[in-house]
Image (tube, rainbow, N blue to C red; front, side, top):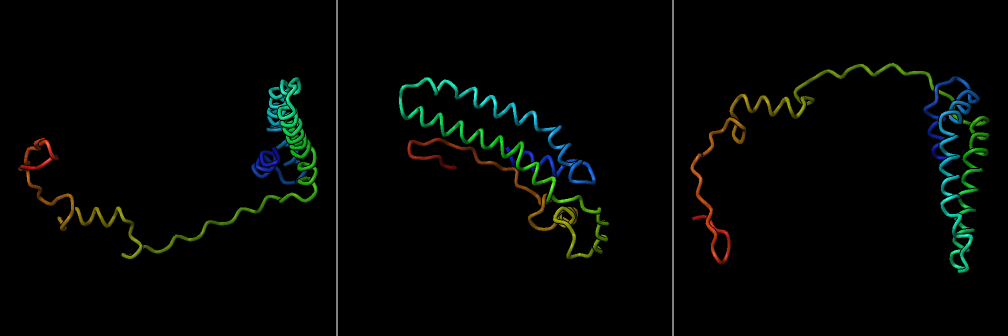
Length: 143
């Protein structure tokens, strides 16, 4: 759950940490709460089991989900509001590199070779004689 809050914080618009945390909790907080609640509700039947294995599994699952919810909905937003990263100023795009023969794309080179009829290119004449395939009892053979 903490990962989802962290991602929502990083993608949130806003110039201050408080704005970003508020937006993150507004957009994904309720979904996280629903996910944790449905998981807890889905494993509630394990509490009625008489088997110690299932009871132990119930306690472990409920503990993990509960601690994950508390961490994701309380501790992580509090930490992000205090020490979370702020948005960076947009950087100017790098200038385009000059094109030379060595930086030509693969598609440019293959198109040029195809238009010149280079060996191995698509313009190369292909033989149209095809030998029929025959099935034999031993293997597939060309005759």
